[in-house]
Image 1: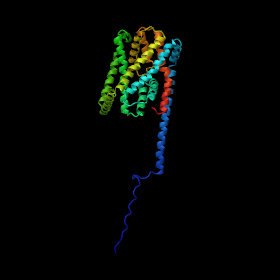
Image 2: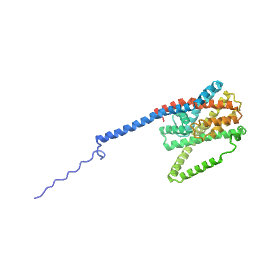
Image 3: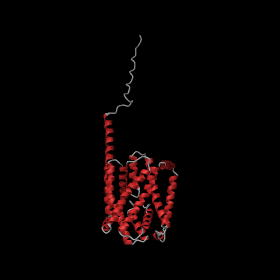
Image 4: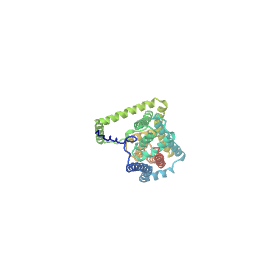
Length: 348
């Protein structure tokens, strides 16, 4: 007899992409993870909306005596000069927006860009100098579609242009008015060389240690290639180059004009060119001081510089307090509200 064996039954073919269908329990787990991630994002955005206002309240409480003094001094100044100074202050944000636009090839939305600079000014006064504004603008550019590498390169180009503009104006004024500011009176009789040498040695060791790490060298080299490429592309378009450098020189010039107008409001008997040299020299000197918005350090440096160029100490103090009131304190709350609104609207 011939024995007939049953043919083996082939296993069922997988349907779709060959993966086993997820069970109802695993689908619920995936949905729960996604929901928790969305909830976390919403919570973070809500915190970021409230955080600027809380920081404003903290800074205002800590500096309440300065605010009270500034508001009291405003009543003694001549109002036409103060109104002109307020108008120049409002022009500083379009100047900053012009420089930001000049640092990238893509056209950024104009109104949002100006609003972002207004909000960045508030963030810059709530965090260490430059950090707040840099974070806000970096986020804005990435939301506009630029990659993180190109946004960082544009940010570096902006900072370079702003520094060159400020130092360039100071250098030009010193050439035109070499006796405007006696720098010898601003320096201590015995400079603390020891701490400076130690700080320089530590900085050299840190830079040398980082340069010895291959991954760090690779990252830095890649960033420099991107930054140089962006700089060449921007300067190949005259409109972008004019916006970049025009805004970089206009921003410190407008700030200088605000100080000159406030000085005129209080009748400070110092030539305008000397006031400009004093302001630029003071702001350059405190650029490396890691205080929020230069609060405290800028005021002290400005008072010393104004006295050095021939101003009376009492009047110079009043000028500096009101100048900082116009450029820092009055825009701080609306700037923080704008920052919260931009976060809520997902502009940044």
